Length: 610
Image (cartoon, rainbow, N blue to C red):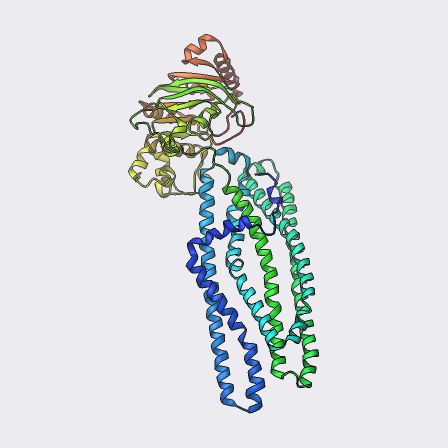
């Protein structure tokens, strides 16, 4: 997807896209058929009132036949009731069908978004994707509720009126049709200008969504660097552009509909002028003249409605093009056709076999990295920012696929395992803890209904989170705001530990998991970890070397290459890269500067050099 894809507007009508859209009507054929019949009957009933007026004026009023007038009045009322019933069925059925189709499309889009790999999210702003799921799908709803089916009602009405006019008096009919070139000119002007205006409106609303998502998410940074005024001016500029684009489109509507009414009035004037002469000459009845006037007024209504539906069609074509482009985006990291499942009893033997990987082009973040982690072994990964520490985790959990080499878990290539099976074997605790709106318990169990409240409490107790949770107003049922805004950083980190441990993973993955907690809390967590890591494979990305000195093995990455491997004492004795990192931190701690090796990006980041 292009970053400026919102600026691109496809054809006003695309048969290929329309075929794909019409496929969504398939499950609702019965509802569409009912609506189609209701539209047809409603169009036919709309043809009757003017002709009944002709009958009354020409037949029953001159004869003074009150009983005939009563009969016609009853028929007229019955047709009004029937017209109301048909319109009710049409609107109810189409709106209900449109809502169901909109639900189907949204679920399909969201399901696809869940399957797309993180590389896709590295390239696409969240605000744009939200526009796909919300505004673009709404445009398709308008197509199904007031476009693709109901347009037949306008066509039936238009053709029916033309046939009746020609049947009643071909001379007046041709006179009525003589203004159609003017209607065509006005309609073409409207369609051309509204199409360009609509493109601008769509562009502006997408930019508003993207701007709001980015600024609201980063509001703490905005306030910290005192950018409120500048961001307000920027949003005012974007919002004003959106307002002006809408005002421009309103102008075209304000001109179009009065212009159609003016041409309609011109047609009525011609009918009155010519038809009145025919009535005087007794070549036409007065009832026929009145019917002609009524039919001519109804004749131009479906024309203006069809012009409006053109805008709906244009909106649907543009939105469907973007939605289908999203749905057609290939899933680079997907489940294998025949997934291989290692025995669950296997405790997590992990092998990196000559792995090379880069986020962008040929810029390798990892180069020919090979190592083995035995079941139950505790391994730490250290290195400066950009050395590839977090990338190891991204590849191991198969958020991305390796470009060369392979990674195996218990002897099976991760690309041959089902994604759910693979990731269920890992418990991940990263620096960037993401909590969802809900409760403390729901954030620990994450939808796993089989995880009882007691199991949740046991996990909280194991990581020493139970005291602060019990102090909350409702304990584990205390509401958690979006992104855990009501909790401290340290509390969110403890909940992240409990979440990972509650699922009893084979492999525990820690991405500098204690970096966001205070010293006292860190000591509590480290005590818990010694128990929890017992018999469980553990891989820990670390920046503070003091936290990993008792690991079974330490891997040292430097510029994407595995340069050193050994225990803490062995690496210090070599006086290599690890020794320099350790001395750097030791001197920083002594000087009180707090200097440490810089922080890596979260596991979900796709930035090169993570």
